[in-house]
Amino acid sequence: MLAGTDVVAIPYEATGFPLGSPLNRSGVLIARWDEVLWAAITVGKTQRDVVRHGGYSYAEILHRVACLTAYFDRGSGCRLHLTGAYRNLDPSEKAVVSFYVGMTFAKLYADKALHIPWMMHISRYEASWSVAYGANTNRPDLFGCNADGEWAVVEAKGRARVTQKLVTKMQQQKSSVASIAGVEPAYRFGSATRFEAGALKLRIVDPPARPRAQEVPINPAAWLLDYYGPIVDLLDDLNASYGSDGLAARLPGSGVEIGLVEGVVAAVREGRARRFSRPGPRNAEFGDQIDELSRVTRSSRSLSGQIDAPEAAALVERITSSARQVSRENGGQGDGVYVRMRRP
Image 1 (cartoon, rainbow, N blue to C red):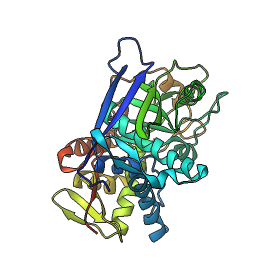
Image 2: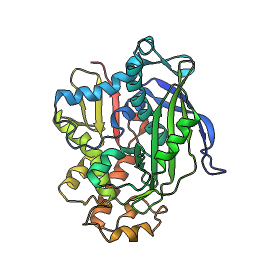
Image 3: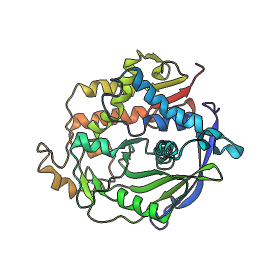
C-alpha cells in the first residue's frame, strides 16, 4: 500500500492548445501520494452541509481515499498500476471508480500544470448561483481559478481508452461556458484518465471552442467561501486543533489527517459573517450588470482585482495570499489545504 510521502509519476499527453503553447506536450506529472489524496478529497466540493450526516459524511470522504488505495499501487518507474482488487470488480463497479479517478486527476493536472488549485463542480454551482445555459445544454464537470485571475473550464472523464467520440463529447461540454465574471476562461480542456497496460496515463485535449456558450457572472469572494466552507465545517465538526501548520484533525477510525492554514481559516470565518451575493443570469439582484460584465475582458487582472467591492476584494486577497504561503514540501497545496496519511 502506498505511503503518504511516496512519489508517483503520471505520464500525460496534452494536445490542441493554441499553436506554440508550452502546454502542447507529453510529460510526466510528479506528485506525492498525499497530493493525490488531496485532489480526491477536495475536488468539486461546495455544499454547506458536507458534515450534516456525521459519521456518514466522514465515510464519504474515506470512500474517495479508499477508491485510490484499494485499486492503485506504485509499480516500476513510480507508475500507478491497477491492483487485482480492481480487476475483479464488476464493470458497473469499475465505472464508479473511473468517475472518481477522472475527477481526481483532472484537478491534479490543473494544479500541477496550470497552478489552478481551486476547482468545483459546476453542477452544484449551477444550483446555488442560478446559472442558466443556452442552446448548448451540455455541462462541463468542473471550473476553477488561480490567484492570477485565470479561469479554467474542465470536462473530466475516466475511461479504459480515449476515443475520438470521447474527445468530441469533451469538446461540447467544456465549450458551454463563454466567460466567468466577464473573463474568458484562459483554459478550456478535457481530461481523461486511461490505462495503458494496466498503468494510469492522463490524456489532455483542448479542442476549439464552440459558439452559443453561456456567460457566468460570479462574485469571487462568495465563490471562495463556497469552496472552503465545507472544509472549515468538517474541521469544526471534528473539534480540530491548531498546530504549526494551521487547523488540523484526523478523520475518526482512519489515518487520514486534513488541515487548513490558519490565515485561510480566519478569513473564511470572518467572511461568512458578511453577505456576499451570488449573482447568476437569473438573479434580479445582479440584473443590469450582466451586459456590462460581458463587455469587459479582465483576464489580465488578479482574482481580487476582478471585484469592484473593496470588502470582497480584500477577503479574496487574504485567502489567496495565505494559501500561497503554504510550503508544498510540508504537505500543503496551492489552496492551503493539506492531506496526510498518519498511522491509525
